[in-house]
Length: 149
Image 1 (cartoon, helix red, strand yellow):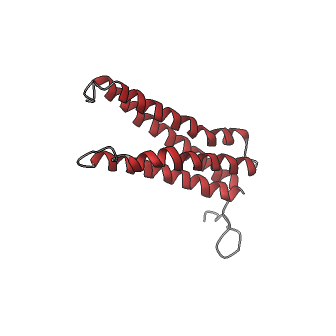
Image 2: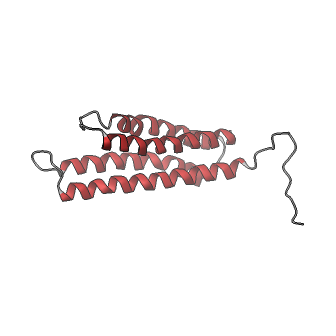
Image 3: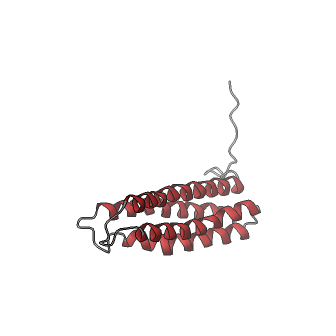
């Protein structure tokens, strides 16, 4: 189950990498219509929350320390915060829907929070790898430390 935690946390990290790619796709789509950020939205509101819940569940089943289980569930809260930041930024556009300095500043917090959540997921993955222990050698022989000559 601990090896499964490593795999699922790697998948979660991969989903976050894709999230940044999908944000760039939306940002560079010309003309930018309502669907420019569809991949970003679906990944952020469906795939990432499901993988986060699965990661936390697998961490609990793997009898991971409580701190790791808590860290594994934290991205759900940060994803909710992402949605709130995006809605708040949209709420501060002007009457014609044009960005204002305030809406752009709030939108910048969306990107900053994205960086923070990726940092959390990297921490989950690293902790999962430590918890799983060393990976056995391919030939079935335990890996040995080489003593310096």
